[in-house]
Structure formats: C-alpha cells, structure tokens
Image (cartoon, rainbow, N blue to C red; front, side, top):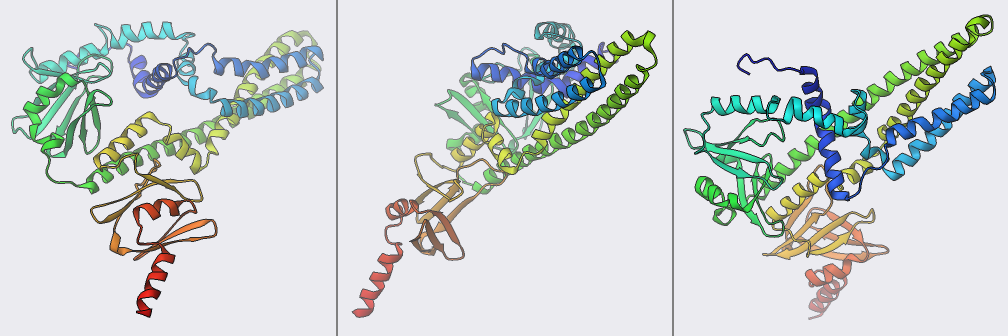
Length: 445
C-alpha cells in the first residue's frame, strides 16, 4: 500500500474474512425472495428459552428445584427450536445480522455506515487500494472498460505478449484485485439471449457481462467467440465443472469442521457455566447477605447456559446432515445452478431431451444423435455422469417387474419401468422382445 497506514485494520480483516460472503448472501436472498426480514431469528429464538427459564426460577423463588426444571426447559425448548429452524430454514437469514451483532452493531444500517466509511467509500480501504493498482499498472482514461450484469466495472487490457488479459474491478463493490486470465485458458464467450448478457467462460470461472462489452471482446479475443471455435472438447467442460464442484465440496467439509470445533467450544462453555451456577447455588445457602447479588449472577449464568445449549443443538443439526442434504443444498445454490446450466449449454444438452428416472428418483436426460446413445445425469453433483455410447454397442432394453434394464456392451443401466416408453421412441430396434422375435423369424428362414 505504498507505506500508507490503513486505519481500522480489525474492521477490514473481519469484513473480508468473516462477513463479506454472509453480506452478499443476505442481499441476494432479499432480491430473490422479494421479502423483508421482519424479525431477527437469532436473537428472538435465543430469548424464548431464556425467558421461560427465568419465569420458572422467579415463580419458585430461586429454589434448587427451580434451577433444575429451568435447565430441563431450556434443553427441551432449544431442541424444538432447532427442529423448527431447520424446517423453516430460519438459519438462512440470520447469519449476516448475528455476525455484525457480535461486533456491537444492533442493526444493519449502523454497520453499513461504518462499512462505507472504512472500506467502500471514497476515502475507504478499497479506494486507496484501487488508486495504488491504477498507478502500478499505468491505467488511464484510454484503458478499455467492460461491465458485468451486476454493475461491477472492470478495466481490461492485455499484457505485452498478448497472451493474457488482465481485469481490475473498479466500482469499489468488492476488494480491487488484478485477475489475470491466460487467453489459452478461455474456453469461449457467447451471447446469451435468454439472460440478455455475454458469458465469458474460462477454465476456472464465468463472467456475466453486459451486451455493450461485445465490441471490446471481439477486438481483444475474437478467436474465442463461440461461433469461431472449431474444436469441440467436452472433456474440458466436464473437467472445469468437476473442479469447481470439488471446491464446493471442500467448503462444505470446512464448514462441518468449523461447526465441530464450535460445538466443542460451546460444550466447554456449558460445563463452566454449570459448575459456576452449582457453586453459587451452594454459596447461597450460607451467604444470605449476598443473596441478591448471587441470584443476579445466577441469571447471567442461565443466559449463557441457554446460549451454549442453543448453539450445540443448532450446529449439531447441521453437522448431522447426510450426503443427500448436501446434494439438495447444491441443487438449490444459484451459483451451482448457473455453472451447471452453462455446462449443459457447452455440451449441447437441452432440457427438451427425454427424461428417465432411476428407482432412487435421479433424473437422466437421454437422446440419440449422430449414431450415439447419450445419457446425462440431470442432477448437480460433485462428478458429472455423461455417457455417449455407439448405438451399435446398445444390445437391448428390457422391462422386468418395476425396472427397465438397458444392456450395453460393457454395463447395464437400470431405470424405472416407465423408461421403456422413451427407449421405444429413441431406440426402436433395441427392444428385447422385438429382437428375440426377429432373431427367431430369421432362424426359421
């Protein structure tokens, strides 16, 4: 930063490391759901068991029995709240607010003001960093600029060897960084008429750009326009998607590890608070002069006991998610959906192709083209399942009980019985009974 002292270092690091992604997700949820977050689930759901416990303790005049009943009530009510939160997905809207609340901000407006002052404003961290990068890379008013569909602007230029394009985001919506993309790693760029944008796909990412970026892309990387690409390499597209999905899987695993660590911390806090509560209850039997102070301190212990129990149950519910829960999560993730749809486009796979289902409910798209029988798993998963088999290597399909088996040269695929109607249409000469009758007739001749 050219020896400039960046103030409010803790605020910046906390935002970059812990809050930025939660903030982005929060605002995306508001836009997509078109509804206001009228309540704060994190705070209100924390207080319900605590208030129940306080009522029990006060009604029973701080007796030992009242503390035992109160803690049992806290456990039961937090179990019910954890189940309710999971069913209603209340935890999805609380993260951004709960994180800034830990920093002492009780509403989003206060935090956003500080965010603008310290980071995103004209004199903030991003502005200083952007100016430094502009000077370092000799960017000026003649440097070309393109814009993404979300309004982010990028300076764009090539290096001296003309084999790399450099992008620098410049709207101060996110941390200004130089993104260098080897031209050889750019798969293509194309116009998406459905989304009214340009999609620039590299081996690691996709950029969604406004249509007025087209002349600049044509000037810099005309040979990468999809219409100008001669070689079709489906393996590259599949590999790109699988690499991305394995980063998603890694994030899910890290999230589970963080949850496990946080659960252990809360268990330790719970044990300490319980020991403290028991100690003070013991002292209250012979320190009558300090009973009011002891009772107030016990209430504070009850609050933290409730908080620890709440965290343990809510995080344990997330920790115990099965693989099918992860699959459901990624199939509802907007970024994963975008990546998957672009994969299908790059492979020439249409949603209009016939659908067949396994007995487990997995959907496959299937079609016949250019002498090949194609099968594609139409579910977002960590690996891509796509087979293109010569029709001559399809031996037959056969209905047995509730299943439809399709026998290939080296394997057998199993689908629901209804799949035979699809195969009858796209593989009319591969029906097992028809082939058997045909062969019998030929033998008679």
